[in-house]
Every structure is written in structure tokens, then in C-alpha cells.
Length: 162
Image (cartoon, rainbow, N blue to C red; front, side, top):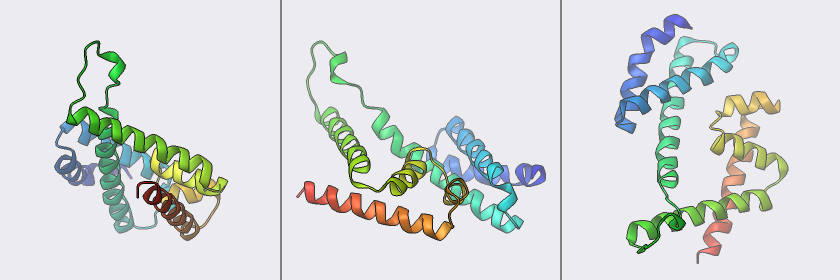
């Protein structure tokens, strides 16, 4: 694994840097990738499989970081004494409201198993392989439950906004 790490780290840094633009964020993403791969190292059979997993994991981590930045950058209005709601503040408020609504849908509408799976995947940033190991399930079953959970949340969300 050490040889793989040193030889492939540069490639993953390029991928992460292209997506995140900040060098420190890219380095964090690559480090997170290798931490995740380390947890499932016994399940990885070939170097090609490790490379594919590393690339996919890096991309997913970067996308999650970008998504989170849009939500985390929201500053609550109570911090301002004389405030004016401009377009960006309104947009941030809407994003935060949507996020909170989706979280409540997950808690209220999904089965306990779907809740666990979607929280591990979307909030804890675990890979399908990790979730399958933790829940002692087949990867296909995890994917199916995740897909159904996302579909249900999406349908309810879209109905509420129409």
C-alpha cells in the first residue's frame, strides 16, 4: 500500500486540485481518500481496483466538500444588527431551509436501514464498500437501498415544491 500511495498520490492531487482549486483542500481530500481505502484494504484485490477506487473516492470527497461549502458559508442573520437581505443571503437562507427540510424527510420518511445507509453515505462520506462492510450487507443491496431512499426523498421534495 505504501508503494501505491507514493506513486499514485500525485495523480490524485491533480484530480483534487482541479476540482477544489485550493491546494490545502486538495491535500486533505487525498488524505481522506487514503484513509478510506486503508479501512477496506483487505477487500481490494488488485492495483487497478485500488486505482479506480482511489480516483472515484477522491472525486466524491471533492464534490462533497464543494457541496458543503455552499451550505456552511451561510451566516445566520442574527449576527447582523442592521441587516439587509440581499440576493446572496436570500439564496443561502433557501439552501439552508432546503437542507433542513431534506434532513427532516430522511428522519421521518425512510426506513431505519435506509436512514442508516443514506446518513453514512451522504453525511459521514462513507463509500458503498465501507457501508456494506459495516452493515454486513452486499454492495448491491446497499446501492439498491440508497437509490430507493434518494428516490423517495426526491419525490417528496419535488411534490412539496410544486
